[in-house]
Length: 212
Picture 1 (tube, rainbow, N blue to C red):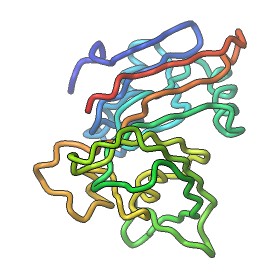
Picture 2: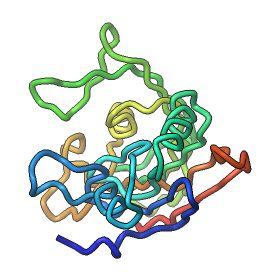
Picture 3: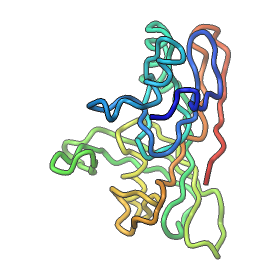
Picture 4: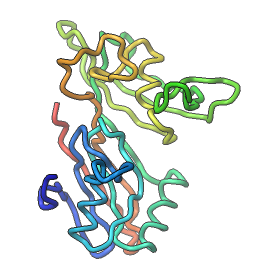
């Protein structure tokens, strides 16, 4: 197990911390001792108390908030629930996307026989909306770099929505049919978070440099 001082803390005050999670690392502990190492586990060792405000997929890197108190957790969770947090992800999609921007609104539900995979289901799925924008238009490139703005926060939302465009996120073992063992990571990164501080009410903006 890696030592807790390797946690990449970008910001910290008496109420919460902003952490840059590496790809292929848990946000919260999984089941069993072998899966205890995670952002919140290490944060708990460092701060004495740590509560996950939201989560990133194991394969996704980037910004994640950890509350140091239950009251802060309550307030920040309300920010996310009421969609008062601005979120931006960066991703590389397989193939060349023709359009420059768009909005995808397709309901999602867990594909229980193949969980944790999610699927689009118009009848039983929960509403899910993603806005996207192409960042580069290099015709020589095989793939497309995009910014993703999730309006809702469903599990695997960005990954399924990009697949539904026939441009899955590069290196996605669940939704990219051309993914191979040589792909070292999912090319999805939680790049930016903006929100009102839950106690001081100052407007905050955090950015984690995209690693790909």
